Length: 322
Ligand SMILES: Nc1nc2c(c(=O)[nH]1)N[C@H]1C(S)=C(S)[C@@H](COP(=O)(O)O)O[C@H]1N2
Ligand SMILES: [Mo]
Image 1 (spheres, rainbow, N blue to C red):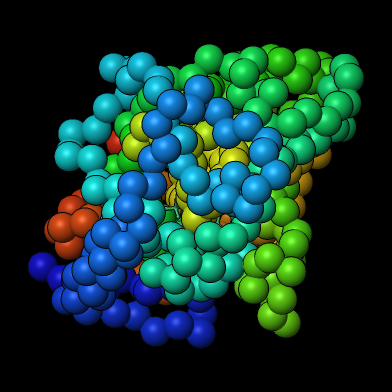
Image 2 (image 1 turned 180 degrees about the vertical axis):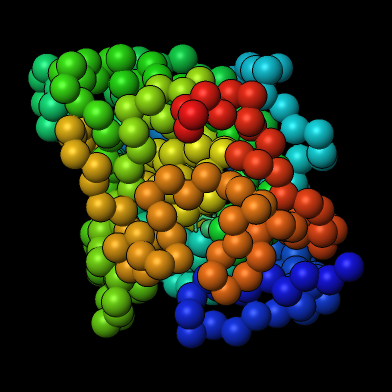
């Protein structure tokens, strides 16, 4: 059975068949392994798991990935082999850089993702700014394998390393009238060519969750993947992953958390309100206006499988939407 999956989820972009995606995949995999062979090892042993703020270029860009160890949490597994690292880190949506998935990793290579300050503001006891590595040191890290289901109907299985957003929210100490958490990414046109183009996008990328969603046990703030620090193309130094929602909710490169009592605007909803809603929960019965959401394609194998309500996480989250 063939479904047509959209290539970008841009109105201007066409759609491609799974065969075409498969061919592209083989092409980018070949390119990726050649690049890896030329670079030597990406991992520098002997790190303490956190990128320290040294001033040389490679440290600033997070291009130098450091080993990051965290115990795998057995509660959060998938019924499918993990997606190969070279696939997950060479097929990205990150419109600050480009709308072409296979080019993101290259264009993001020089991005300065360290040092990195994170601002916490709004309805909290004490607004503050903290360096990302100081924050990470205060959280205990774990590994969780989650499904990542893009609204474009493709899926990967990724071993993230991070900490529950619930712990982070507790640490922020929101006031009792806080109802939402708004998250904002960076605005740096000099380093991100997608932000230099005249476009209809309202940079910086911004997203939000209800406080109940942010403190659900599944919601993870991510600082690493595949046993290493997060590469730039995957959202270094800090991103979100909410596995029961379409991937666009999982904002990358977060610079700001703001607690509010009103529902914040979100990037894709503001751009195309008829197509992307605030909740964006994975739901096979609710088609996108331009394509079905009943099935999805596994990026690595090309296999097409049925989509599950809440991306298979119904038992954790269904009660949020009663
Ligand atoms: N800042 C930012 N975050 C973002 C995006 C983006 O363009 N910019 N794309 C989103 C989309 S559509 C998806 S599917 C996931 C993709 O994450 P991945 O590239 O690690 O697979 O990131 C999300 N987070
Ligand atoms: Mo996506």
